[in-house]
Image (cartoon, rainbow, N blue to C red; front, side, top):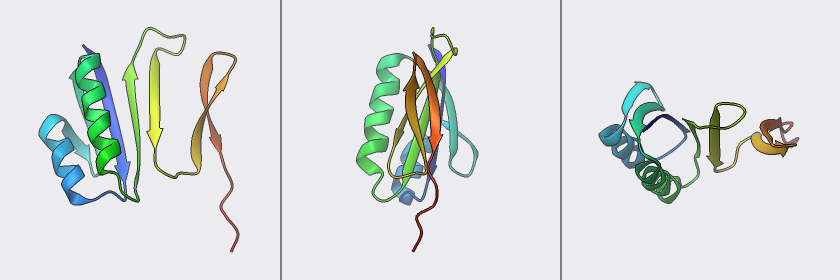
Length: 97
């Protein structure tokens, strides 16, 4: 079992309700819990399936150099990149109209 945090933004209310059934909603769009890897993957599948036009990040405790791993889904200016084994976040500039 490991600590798990999921943050979502601009997602349908049904996904937020589904996440609240498994995790504690600490703030609007921020959910936390303590689950096995199998359950964590099931929760992530539900997030990806219900995302629509929103975006999500899931971070969990892991035996990695950083002490955690994370995944993202949806369109966001912050996207993960691997930098010599470390997962960092690249910040893309806003699109100019």
